[in-house]
Image (cartoon, rainbow, N blue to C red; front, side, top):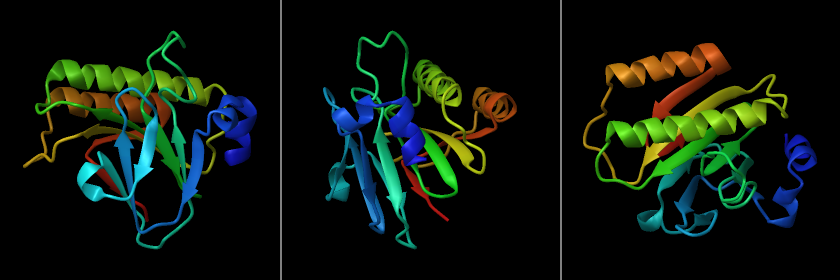
Length: 170
């Protein structure tokens, strides 16, 4: 997968958008005016990848790295992948799960996914798209609109849409 990404998005090498980690807990922070970065402190992280088997995980900063603000399309914040799973993540900075923020996040994930599907072969990967809220919710919210969006992503792209600030690699 690294080879395909570097071939189709050569700017990821020049901009240092792609890196690897095998830590048990990989903490990602969305820098406001910059690309997403890996941090050591969980208290400042916006998203956590639980990597209990300490697999080699590739991380790709997308917004403000693979694509800049002048790219002319919506894009999600970052992606991560191992040998089995490829996940696109959009981090939303809000204390409430407003429907307008969800719609915006879904659009960012969808346009990024469409762009990557037009260039990258994802055969053999389980595709995921994740809306991550910076705050820690006290309970999950499964609205009808979100259930419809999950079905659309699955039917149109073969991707599972979820919400949450962490992902457990299996």
